[in-house]
Length: 418
Image 1 (cartoon, helix red, strand yellow):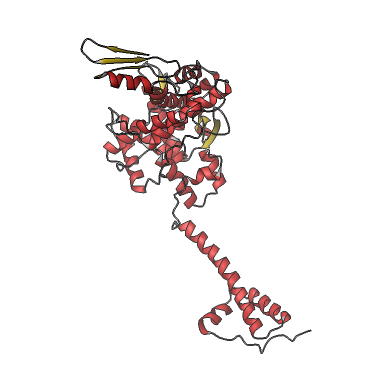
Image 2 (cartoon, rainbow, N blue to C red; image 1 turned 45 degrees about the vertical axis):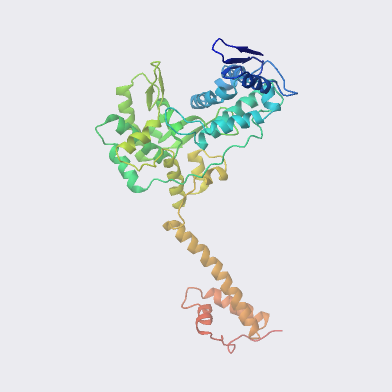
């Protein structure tokens, strides 16, 4: 630790400690410099182990576990970790484990940072993904015996408001119109959106779809390494292609073969390095909004929610929906369930359910009514059997009782055999 006076009359404080960020600041007074130096003294019990968070990330990024992950996952983790490393990279893993308040303080500052590109603070989703990336690195570090505990364990992630955005028929029509546009980029974006709606897939899955994995003759496509919490690296999933999906895919493949004949992807983006990558679908929503084909709140993932919600409204079993969408639990698929209880099929199902409940209630009331009239168990059994046999033939006796208050006659009751 060093505090020196500069020729300008200002004071410079330099602190270098392994396992902590380097401090090099210039202040107006000696007292300020000494104060900074004092605060930089490691709290009692802090470790100075050799592995910093940045070093752990470099090791993880070339590890087998990282390489086995899908490209989209690797790219997401790398992007999110940039912000984490900017704030925490110089801390040792041991210090982050022993003093989680370091991470909490960083989160407080991170949520207030204003992006130079967007001019806004990070969203709750961004913060959650950054903590998730840190947690993934921490778990890996535990498996490599760098630390005994995940540094991100117990760090509270910001809550997310459930997205309820659906895609009404009018917007789907707008997207269909955009698919016929002379603007080839807009038309491709529209085809991508419509296929997400037809297949019920995640946008990232469609973005990485390989041409050889499309079997239009069998009406199916194979999504590889799809998201699955129980399978490291993801799970392959075969999905059904509707006739509209086959038509859209055929058009896209013709366009792709002309535009990127050497690419393996159905939807292709050429990177700055000249290599072919899966589709950069971030521009899909932007292009469709600019063309006024959709509303300003439209996002591509809403098409997956629309698929699930409409399927539920139309009475498709959840097990069938889950096979198509790749959800592994009812809890997972229910997140996307924005099906309306006023949809025709659901109305009919609810009415049928109510009728069963009401019929059971009617029979119980009738049985009670017969008892009040003094009928014996044998007589009640006779009346109930007669009632059940005559269902659907004229007005139900229960309706007469409830509406007119009529006392059912006991004159024709069968003799008591007791």
